[in-house]
Length: 261
Image (cartoon, rainbow, N blue to C red; front, side, top):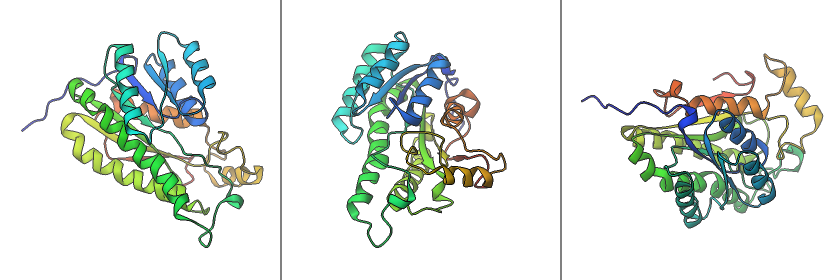
């Protein structure tokens, strides 16, 4: 039996939830969707001033909403508020929110000092957060007959060159969830994909990274430079766009060719 689906939504017709959208990579992702005409729910946890400033720049398209993605009820309330404000269900979710983390290998716990609390913090933010946003938006996507979920991963899963055990393990689990959700939700016209960057120059999380590390990465890539947050954000747009309508369960590495996969 042929599974016919509604025509995919152009970016300008989408209502997009970006978690952790007030700063860092999330800010670039939100700005990319806004630039293309989408309505964007600017989710934040503690960065109220930055989120509200972004929403003020795009008063017709952006809505700033506070919610901890680890709190199921808070996420459900966010989704309800967004639907009431924009008059349409959320069609696209970008799971970007990152628990507190600094990309500085010298400061991270190695195997002999790693604790389960380190692991749990990252698993809660990455996997539990993505589960909550998916479940909260699922009814609206099914009503639309389509949906796009884009999870933010890391190339460290394929190339674990630094001891970010907790962060990398959580992103690996999120990749597995990406693939199982893609299989589960495909019949509803919902695609689920991942965009995995390397070290980005520069976000709040990578501000602690020594220049020597950036230089080493740049020299190791075919493009001879470090990927920017804006470049990764453009790849997120691709998975949300009509051009990616037949792609699901995939992980796109956006790192200047550092990891070939």
